[in-house]
View (cartoon, rainbow, N blue to C red):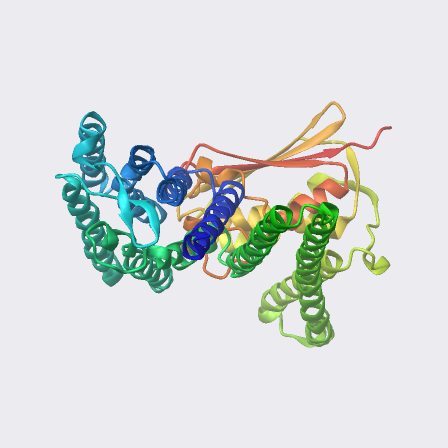
Amino acid sequence: MNIHLLIHDIVYSIDILLMIFFSLFALVKAKNNIAKVILLLLYAGVTIFITSHAIGVSVEDSELSRRILMFNLVDIFLPVFGIHCILALLGKHIEYRKTITLLYVIGVGLLAFFIINPRLFLVESVPKLYFPNYYEPGPYYWVMLLFFFGVVLYMFYQMRKLYLAASIIEKNRMKYFFIALILGYTIGSIDFLLIYNIPIDPVWGFLFVPFYCIPFTYAALNFELMNINIVAKRAFIYAIVSGVIGIALIFLNYINSLIIQSSPLFPNWLTSLVLAMIGAVAVLIVWRRIRETDVLKYEFISVITHKFRTPLTWVKWSVDNLAKGVPANLKPDVEHIQRANERLIDLTNLLVNLADPSDKSYEYRLAPTEVNKLIKIVCENCNSRAKAKNIHFETMLQSKGLVSVDTNKIQFVFQTLIDNAVTYTPSGGRISIETIDDNRFVTIRVSDTGIGISKEDLGYIFTKFYRTEKAMKSDTEGMGIGLFLSKKIVGKHGGKIRVESGGEGRGTSFVVSLPLLRN
């Protein structure tokens, strides 16, 4: 038994499992855009390389080994996918489209050349170190290496330029890309040394996946999804757990095979039972970790919001007392403070309800209400901000029916939609609010001529803590929770809310439908 080869195959098998995990994680979590496609292509390329390497260096037939290792031609595209993905994530891929296109054209040309002339890339494999067969370079193998490392150096050069001109947030993101590229390509290049008979064990090349893919995934998804650390930290934890479980199962399976070969009378069911128990324990550990994370999240929200209550209540009492004797010229300012404080109290109550849905003190108290009346109140609250930005308000309130709603909560929804319209509409823009009765529902449409929403972002608008890149630049203080809560509230009333936009710079419309009370 070649123990060194066994260890080599085990650690590379773990890499394959990790790559499958990262690919599935990106497929589910990343936004649907060009960056997601390139990221998945990058991870697919890495998976192909690792798989072909692990199998190709382990087979006994030298010609079969060469044919399997020919899949390493995917190396041509790994740095190209890498730079394309980074530029797309930074929003610079359009600016560099000619360079990216040129790299792909050269890469495809090299791929076609080596497919037509495979023995110019690799000749029959030969034994090296403890491997039955290992790469034996063809006369033009160096051309692939030249292109590979040339693109890597170009990537560092361009990223350095972008880093110097980047914002603080972008610089923080790019640091993780630098870590991934430096550690990943340095460690991953170990595999190439033995190709040219430099006797360094390539087993250490397996560290390419954790040192490259973990920081790369963190930089890509942490900043791309919701700008909070929990996503990437979960990915890291689950990746490590998956790796440990994979190692344990592989070793136990191997031991099981040895026991069966050496002791035919040994009960096979025993090792199967042990494997099943390990799997069950692993599932239990992961489930408990997820549960602990959710509990901590809700406890955090609950503690914070409960701490807000007391000072907000004191502010309310103080402002109410102040309003009784304030001079006439200061009354508008006091009224603004009162309305802002009421909104904070409503938002705090909603957050408490979000953290503890079983809290009966925040149940919905429904009463027949005119939608138009609520809209008018919210418009009055936002009117001063709109005037300050020279935004034209247009209302077409045609609804005549009644709806059964919790007034404070539905008013929060309208306040959120109209506040967002004012915030994200530039000076001189227009906001229109329309209500109309339609069969069994009243439809409320809030439209603006603001920054708009890209097609890629539309599907995430009602996600908790999610904010588009343009929204973050227009309003740095937003939390990305207003629309999430609005959808929850509208749903509780049996209604629906949706968003429409023609794209960035083309304005946005939010449409709310609430069931009408029957006469």
